Amino acid sequence: MLRFLAQTLRDYHHVGAIAPSSRSLARALAAPLRSRPHQGPMRILEVGPGTGALTRGILEQLHPGDSLTLCEINPNFVAYLEHRFATDPEFAPWANSTQILCKPVEELAMTSSFHHIVCGLPFNNFLPETVQMIFAKFEALLLPRGTVNFFEYAGIRWLKRLVSSKSERERVHAVEQVLKKLISHHQVNQKLVLWNLPPAWARSLQFD
Image 1 (cartoon, rainbow, N blue to C red):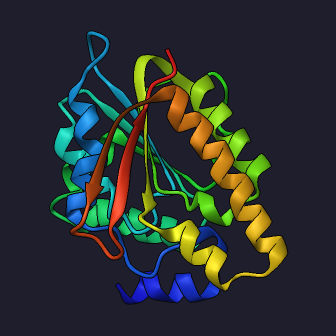
Image 2: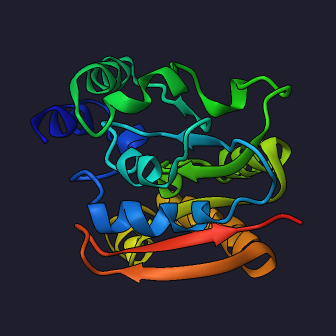
């Protein structure tokens, strides 16, 4: 928790949270992973894993032979994740099945493909063009019948508009329009997770 708070204070733009996600939210986001859209081992991508709060839910859904790729831009979080996979009893059994990359998802090779994607990025902190680019990348990386699973804090855009400058309100509104369009066209499931700080919507999108 202290490590998470320290990184939040240093880089709130990319961390975008005041506390790690709860186990309830992690399990809600990982629930669609129970669907195995293709025969054989499953490949999962997690984007923005931070300290691994959402990763725990993913690991609960993995089967022998599955693989997990973590894409994290913060080198301090990468070091912490590497330590967790070496020492944490929940993580260590999957160390040999997990690849940790220190890079933005936009730089992930297009030769990669995944059955499901779980994302912990704070989209409401980004430019709308960045949000569009990231979801376009997700769609390109996702195999047919797979899902993109992400969360939004309940009421966060309303709160941002309440306390922000005009230019910031305009940015937040533009991001909202991008997300609303994606949700209206591609959302297949949503769940309000109250047991989280703050409460959050877990959303699942499908592009085919």
